[in-house]
Image 1 (cartoon, rainbow, N blue to C red):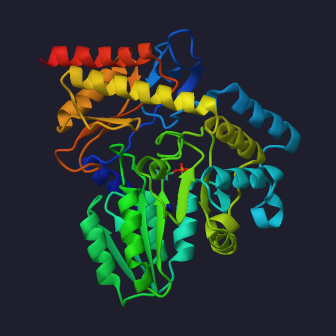
Image 2 (tube, rainbow, N blue to C red; image 1 turned 180 degrees about the vertical axis):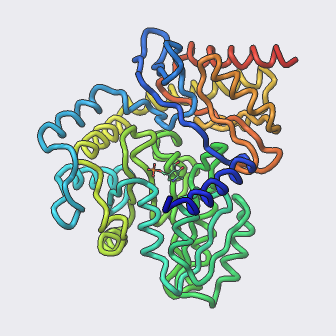
Length: 411
Ligand SMILES: Cc1ncc(COP(=O)(O)O)c(C=O)c1O
């Protein structure tokens, strides 16, 4: 067989990943959505699991936008009128009114001059960082930043790269001081919400430190924030970590349309000059299809809902369900990291117990994500729960009941 030797090498690689415990393994296949019914939110049927309904406590759809009739209707009407795919990249013939309208609305929502959509937030970060990192750029990055930031920096090959310990503002300040004289431009990049634990960057402090060093570099210090888990889930009106921390001075904000907004795609908002530059330079924008016109219309409808009294009510319900779940965990004797973000970690701090708990949850119809070493540091093993505005008080109590049954049997 011509690929025998390659297959051998690939099998060995997978085996090594298995031994390290980092294989993702078989994926759950969703075969049916059971819509919300009375006091219970949506449930899902999985391939091979018969009629047992599962509640998702591991999804990013924090506001349930993807299941709303008005959002689905916007997508359906637009795909009937304009077809499914965009048919080309943006600068050839793939730009539709829906893309332009969404970009304008995203910029207005975030109080920025301009917005620009990408096929995903991953593509948005890669396109932005690769374009803005020149040979004379130093990059300073939080140690827990998302994989898209890490890979974008690798691809961009900056002249200087430094990583500060998670949220360590003293180290960020020191690294900016060390960078003086080594480069023309500095990019400081951080997640807004860190998705493993639902904690957030102190963006107000980050922005203040960045400003204090700005004049020391010929092209200044640029602050780039990826708040993919923050927008639509955090801050009083869902404007994310900037709003929550009261930060001003985030130069370039990146986020996704595929989590709280319930659709698909990513975006950048910032100054007109930066966006004009990125349209001419970001490879993941220029050479890759945009989201479909129908997705753009659906995302625009979701944004309209978010930016309304209904959006505020959804966010309030999300905070109430998050608080109910956190309190329930503590009442059951579990450890969590308190916070307003709907990512709620249950800190198990032990591999075998984490795996046993996840298996117990699944056996009882609850989908949640176990994170073991080396995905998280030893001692930080956890189950990551994600609350949604689609969850009802009865849903939250159901999950707590399942967890309580485990602690009873383990006691
Ligand atoms: C911080 C961050 N950036 C980007 C992404 C990727 O988003 P998308 O699916 O839109 O590429 C994620 C998703 O987990 C994320 O947590």
